[in-house]
Image 1 (tube, helix red, strand yellow):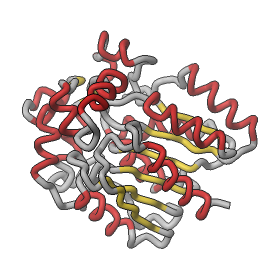
Image 2: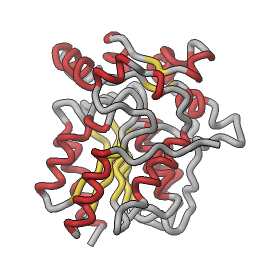
Image 3: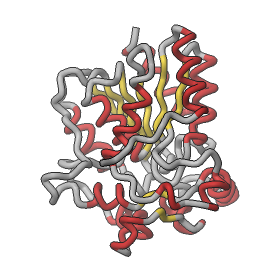
Image 4: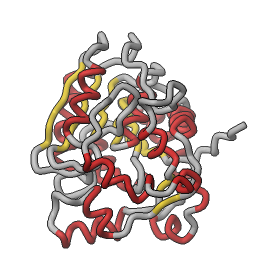
Length: 284
């Protein structure tokens, strides 16, 4: 039986502040190879606009990038459902239903949570694919090969060297910026979710699935990155086509000249602005 990790001190502080504020709350969920700190700029941006912000940790996440590199073991073997359940445990501490914003695998988590009725509105940015999303361009295999190349990586936390990070995340920014992003934000990540997503369409019991027809899903925006190697446009568009069948408002925005690092590189504010525009239009 999996034990859901306790709410961290940082999360508890942000939850208490959000509940005390009475403001609409935005919950941020990071993806693989990142920590909650990748949302720091977004938290400030949304708080200045009148929202409360809560950034969620994945189970096993340490407080700092240095700590993650020093001891990646607690981050290993974390499954899609385990991460989604922990996100739900944080959200359930909030007094009101939040807006959920997720990036990469965090974007998949956001959609899973929306299909559990936990979101007032949802923004999935370069979201990892789920069962039914069929396109698998070569770039996806190349970006995830550091994990998929060894079946034993299902039980490990895997780091990316700079060349791998440059291809999978930071291909759309100058090399100097890519090096800075790698040293500032990159951490080892559990390999298991990558295998779960990669086999989603051949495994009927996969955890990487979303109930796209759930009537209480609410408004959803998918933000795609035109130069993304890890989640190419074809994958984001396929996710949109499946989600478009939902009764709730469903939109897609394509960010030109952006790669997978679009939420924490020099283009982050452009992406945050698109997110804010959607939220303010959809949430009263």
